[in-house]
Length: 325
Ligand code: NDP
Image (cartoon, rainbow, N blue to C red; front, side):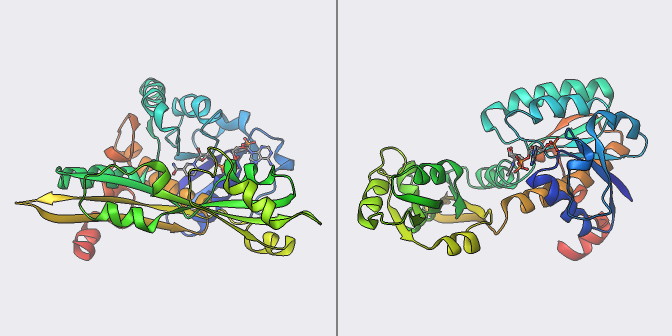
């Protein structure tokens, strides 16, 4: 059994606790949090919670740590610190800073002779793997990424700030028209604003005028004005019942030409009812890889580009060859 520790217990931490339950080869040692352990309420009552500052006492008991902190402030500090002492995986997703994060984690992991897999998840992660595979196979072409249907925190906040709005959420949805263009083999660059449409679900304050509120939303500069925006009015009960989940997903599409102009299209898509639960499931598959690579003596920072598929799957390579080739 691969012994796992969870560092940081938010949405991803909870998702990892669930995901480990679905495996037969991974076992949870416990959750490590910066908060007082007795204040952290886990999904399963039997899960142990420890103070993060005691984690070095667990060096011999843990094969791999799944780091579930935020990309903005937690992982830039926690991943290098912990990679010196443990095999680790993270889902660091600040795309522009990945090279810098890689360098810092690599230095720490080399120093401690550990392996660290960074930027797993779906974007970065599974989307990135598909982008490089598609481009390698169809060099004469164009790749587009579409995100959604997904809940956007920033745009939901903007809706809630409009006068007359009591509550609301905003979903970003890929535009069907733009996706068809992306699949067509055309090299025409698509602009961000034509790639996505925006859908708002709004609860009105008592006495507020629906037409005025709708107008204020769809004409809001930068946020909604450049997009095709639809506003739906719902009740407070509907908002609580139907819009609390964190759905997300998206498409990576590459189309281009081989031969003398033969069109070829490749597509990878995700439709997620819960972004964090899915991201956590990816982290857990890569935690398996990290534990196995550590056993093989591999040292240093790695990304999903470096990990052969056989390492993330519980079956042996022989079984995989028989079943999936
Ligand atoms: P959260 O904000 O839920 O959790 C982040 C950290 O905040 C936790 O590790 C926890 O640390 C602390 N925390 C959580 N809840 C509380 C609380 N109630 N009070 C005080 N502190 C709390 O973030 P998510 O789990 O949603 O996401 C983590 C990161 O995952 C994101 O920043 C994002 O970058 C990344 N991500 C990556 C994806 C990819 O495809 N690569 C996709 C989705 C997300 P502690 O327990 O130590 O207090």
